[in-house]
Length: 336
Ligand code: 13P
Image 1 (cartoon, helix red, strand yellow):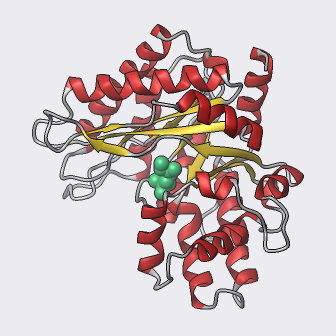
Image 2 (cartoon, helix red, strand yellow; image 1 turned 30 degrees about the vertical axis):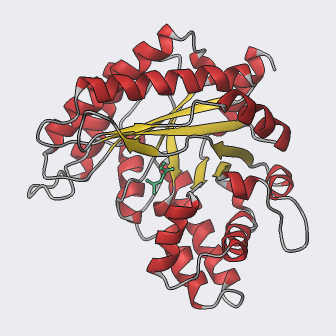
């Protein structure tokens, strides 16, 4: 795969008015989501749920790619069509989560480092054969009393850079995701500071590891008030501070930035993205790569009647994709 092909895929991922649906929950995480709506976490239920999402009619109008979990990349529809074929036929690029999760960082209680580099070269080769065009690796940065430490930020950014290099070697676009968690009582200024330090460290590491930024996508968390902070920033403040932070740390050569929803409500996630895209010229397209903010309404509907509610659940997936696609253009109207 040439450098140009990687750049082309990255650009397609952030095509105007389109974004990513993240359905790459590990088995442990999807179990938590299924538990929340009283669904048993069997392989068939996971397959059926992902089939409902991926076969949403006209999903490709607003969705450029979907991030899958290892199990899902190998699965097919009930009728036997591989999910990757269904996706490519609808103009949706298959992506794959390749990290093996955030684990406690030894020597730094309460902090996490993402694992999964051992054997990654071989796994990526197989994922490329299975049809994956891009990959995702999520690092988790926790804000706390004495956290994050510089060691935690550095260890996670180093791993992200090594992962990105292996992806590009395999002809897969790396989506690098340093998530600064919303959990905590911290204010939005603290979130800004930590996000900026993390992004600067990340792009320093990507530079040191010879990553081709033109073939890389950043998946960022927004600059927001901590979930338990008594003073919650407004939509305008979140949009303004997130943009300012990204402009101070992210090179303009990057083809695009997509956001995670991180526990924001559906409406907040859409409103924040929309507000940023109304704020004039930016160096990169800003779009979405939401998990919960794309799926939660659909999961609730689907869980009430696994086979009877498919059309209704798919309508909500389409509606969320459309709302976020419009927000990626700064053209969303609340309640429209
Ligand atoms: P959320 O949008 O639910 O945060 O999930 C996105 C994601 O892929 C996190 O890694």
